[in-house]
Amino acid sequence: MEMPDLLYLTSLTFTFLVTFLFFRYIFWGIYARYKYWRKTVNLSIEQLKSDAEEKKMALPFFSILVPARDEADVIAPTIDHLVSLNYPKDHFEIVIITDQKELLKGRETGSSTTQLIVEKRIKEIEKKTGMPAIKHVIVPYDFDGRVGGGCSNKEVDSTKARALNFGLGYVHRESVICSFFDAESRPDPNVILYVAARYVATNGCQKIWQGPVFQVRNFYQLRPINKIIALYQALAHEWYFPILMRHLPFLGGTNLHIERQLLLRLGGYDFTSLSEDLELGVRAYLETGEWPEYLPVVSTEQTPPTYKGYFRQRLRWGSGHLLVYDKFRYATQYPESIRSPLLKVLFWKGQFQWYLYQTLVLAPFIFSIFSLFGELDPRNVPVEIQSALAKMAPLYFGFTFYLFYRYRKYINVALAPYGWRKYLAILHLIVMPIAGLFIALPFTTALLLRAIRKQPTVWIKTPRTREIHTVLSEQQP
Image (cartoon, rainbow, N blue to C red; front, top):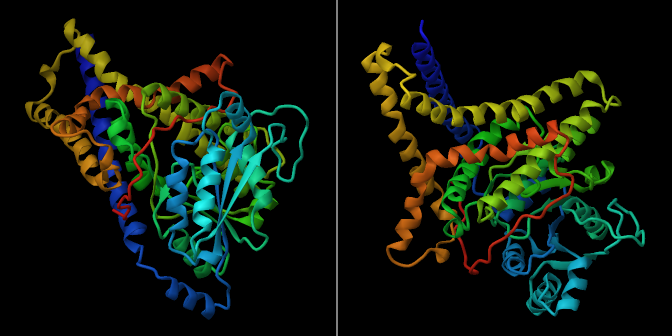
């Protein structure tokens, strides 16, 4: 076989592999729908109270923790949304955690701070009746980061895990479950009602839940590539994460719910980790045997508006994944019988997949170059196969536009441009083939930086976009 024939057969193999992976994703979607989403029922507080009484259990008290450093643009609507959650108002509280460094900087510059927005909103809500308790705690600039820790008189880097560990010291003493949401989260109104129902149904045996996050709400504020990233990320949370969580104790950091006593037993979050959520999930399993349950209740959030913001965010996630892998690779205090299989899953779902997907998206461009120089010879491939493969391209394009249709109800339409520009914003999805090149790039970059020991070591905050405060329809698909 000559080189042109070999190259074309190689390209054909890659094409079949991509097609297989696409239809495998469809299968996962069908499985997830029948295994998880279809079983979601319409709950009521009355039904939950009845179930709890039957099991001689009290309704669990929830503490909702929201880290909010430099979040003045988004925090007020988030507070408004959280106080309206469908759960007895005397059975949950909201703990907003801000950073003293932002407050000090605001005083120097005279700018509005998250602290001022939060305090103003709390005063307005306290004038109303039937509202849950809202606490505002400020992390000292020198807090050491540990649960129950102290101040060191020396500035400590601000991280999400550090803020959450500080906030845990201020939750209600009767709190049973801690729920975590980001500063721009808009969870389904019934989210803690569902968690409470699962807690009661399992007699308190299930202790960790992770729900999907659809980062599509600011779709109309995103660059074209980021729009595609947002849609496929939502698809992954809906279809792929239920599969992933069967093999890996994956935690996502937001729309996350953990029994308080378990969290304290674990010593809270690792405030030095770039991926504190995944680290917590792995550590919880290794130390206590607890495994998270997939919760088919949606929370919407934002995707970074520019590719630079996305790249930095995902680079941190990828680097954090690798650091978690390395941490537990050498954690010989855990039994090898459970640590080794978990490390294998971390590798296959992390490093291996990143290289595979990056190769798959690069392959068509490489083979196109070979074709331009006459190095590919498609004549040995039957016409029927060529025709079938040619039809896959419009299928991929159509599927991307279908995703917009699927997740449109989670998008803040108040942010859409007027007139024909609204439809132009949707037509941006035609850049899908180019976007494929860049989706996995931050993760493969994390691998390369790790190889030369230049990986990120500092936690970087994700940028937000200012949104119009509007009520969104956040129903399950």
